[in-house]
Length: 59
Image (tube, rainbow, N blue to C red):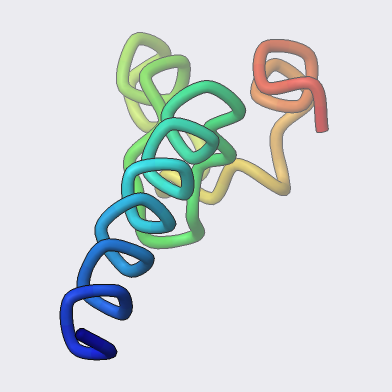
């Protein structure tokens, strides 16, 4: 019984975490920035060093 409850809890927590991640997605440092790709990779995809990326991502 405890096993099923923990499985149920894990399932719902993982779904909630996934929805929050997708809804409020913050790009990680290793991800590519579409603005940088469109601009011809002006700063090697580092979104924290670009004013355009700061504007687009709201950073």
